[in-house]
Image 1 (spheres, rainbow, N blue to C red):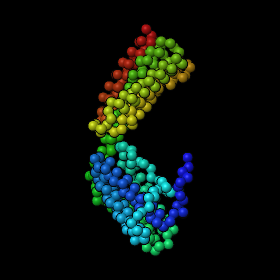
Image 2 (cartoon, rainbow, N blue to C red):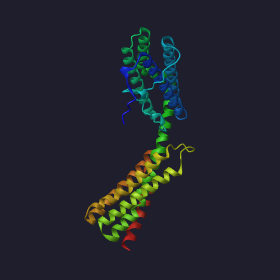
Image 3 (cartoon, rainbow, N blue to C red):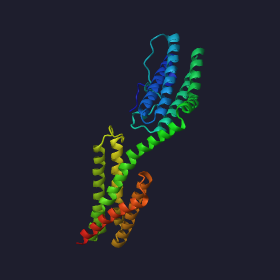
Amino acid sequence: MFNLARRDFSDLSEQEVLALAISAEEEDMRIYATYADALKDDHPATAAVFEAMAAEELAHRDRLIERHRDMFGEVVPLIRREHVRGFYPRKPYWLVRPLGIDRVRREAMDMEVAAADFYLKAAARTTDAGLRTLLGQLAAAERGHETRARQLGETHLTAEALGSEADAERRRFLLQIVQPGLAGLMDGSVSTLAPVFAAAFATGDTWQTFLVGLAASIGAGISMGFTEAASDDGSLTGRGSPWIRGLAAGVMTAAGGLGHALPYLIPHFATATTVAVVVVLIELWAISWIRWKYMDTPFLRAAFQVVVGGFLVFLSGILIGIS
């Protein structure tokens, strides 16, 4: 629904433009402070950069308030970005937990570019020489924040600090995505082998086998997803958002089961079963590779463990199906 209470930027008075700039600087200051607080445990060096940028935004706000005091007095009108039609928005990425370090840095650069554009437009509309000078200076300052951030990075983001942050980011990725996703893939790929191949050899009907595999895969995905999300809220273990972990586990569980269920859409039983067996081998290889790549498990050991377990489940399904 359109907000009819919004005003066009071109309709704002000089005092309102100045008040808008003050509120925008306050909001950016709080965003940078929020980034710093959220990153201080895993990325202390980057947090220091954002603390310094928050301090700069505070200095900008103070300069704007002083100019408003000189021109219009002490009372600053309450006007925010959401009150102005077409004013550049701020995506509430600071509400996301945990914050991705690269995404945060990109968001900060986008914020500075948008702020600089605003000051240039505001400076073009004002007739007061002092205010125009100040707005131009702030536009240049915002444009220069990329250089400032680089300078701050040279101070705080040493090679050792960047290496430490990279390790923390990799650990977060492993705990939040890889581990639950791998557990889901293993559960979906192995646990559904028995019902799928039991149904296949018991009925010889590819469509009925597909329905059994579909039900087993979706059911296992839902169960695994909710189990992962409910088992740990991440507050003590540091494993991150339970919903992201639950989604990773649930999707990969369903995918693991559907991999060898989908071939039974092929009407010819022997062909469908041959394709399903090939898919199973690919799934087991993928599990072994992920364990080797991300869990530092020797590939041959990982393959042996997964293949033995998968073969036993596969064999049990066939024996049950033909009995």
